[in-house]
Image 1 (tube, rainbow, N blue to C red):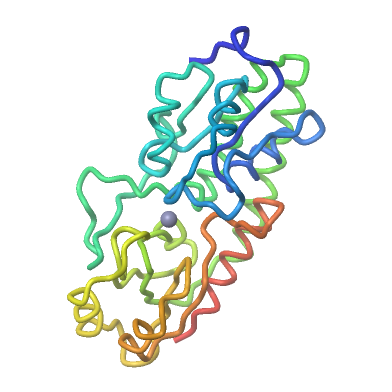
Image 2 (image 1 turned 90 degrees about the vertical axis):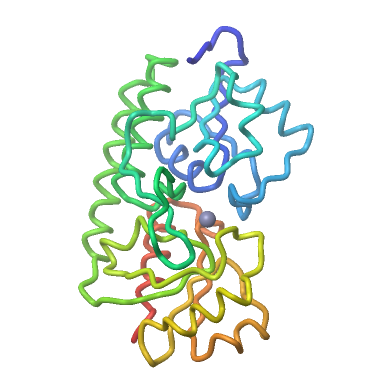
Length: 266
Ligand SMILES: [Zn+2]
């Protein structure tokens, strides 16, 4: 657990960008959190510099998702007393990962928990609770910020909910937590590991199991090469940014993501 006295006071570090955006909302008016990784870096591809390691050691509070998303941080943070892995908390709505053919993988955790608005609100309260304990003089502000964050996010979720069903392919399985509110149906992924290219076998499987005859929506973090795109035609490619790299505000980032997913029309 947390040990403030042993560390430098006053530095809250968030591992990846969406977590940083939530931390920013919770700490507004009190402090400025730091972001460990570059905004566009997802937990799937982490490269730490020596200065990053130092920052993790010297902060008084490091918040990260956990091993299922940010594996390279595990060795550094698992036994670090100033760090909290969100997956270790007995909280949050959790969904399993699906294999590339859409079947749930037993005992797995889809790591993209922040995309579920209720989870995002839970994360805000978790940060507020820890910080309020560390700095009781600001407790009221932290809790109030978390409450405001929850109310605003809920309002946006209510306006973005969709009844139009949409089947989609994903480059990797990443949007499970948005499926219910946006009425999306996962019809398969190109690859299980976002760093690995799809196999020929999977491309054939996708073609044989197209959810419908028209263009299938493909949500992807990066543009598949043209040879790959050609093999899957007809498709509509939608670039998606799971870490909200271009947003400076979590709620705005979530809304942009939801609107992008809803652009997929059939
Ligand atoms: Zn991902």
